[in-house]
Image (cartoon, rainbow, N blue to C red; front, side):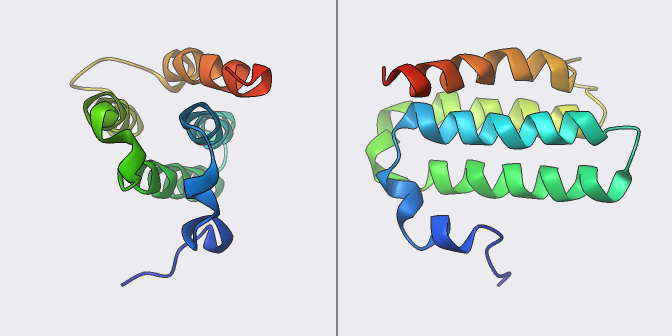
Amino acid sequence: MNQPIHKDLASGKWFTLSLAEQMGNIGSEISRAGKQENKNPELFQKATDRALELFDLTLSDKRWLGRLREIGRAREFFCDTILGGKEYGAQIKDLQKYFDYFGIAARLHI
């Protein structure tokens, strides 16, 4: 089993964050990936790995059982996007718009 990238979050801190905070943090990693796409493959890969780990932590959060379909679909879109967007035709900048709203909500404590 791989060691978690976000050790402090994986050890329990992640599960104290609201859904908006979790999704906003995922969006931050997606934004980092977008900035490195077609520029630095190593940094792009690291950002996508971090985003996927955060998606998986969010999917394992028992508080969001009623939201798993939405979270899982967002992860599916992200995976398709980083693999070329053949299924949905989305680009990272398209996903970033979706995740930005979570970041805004988290800042406003909605």
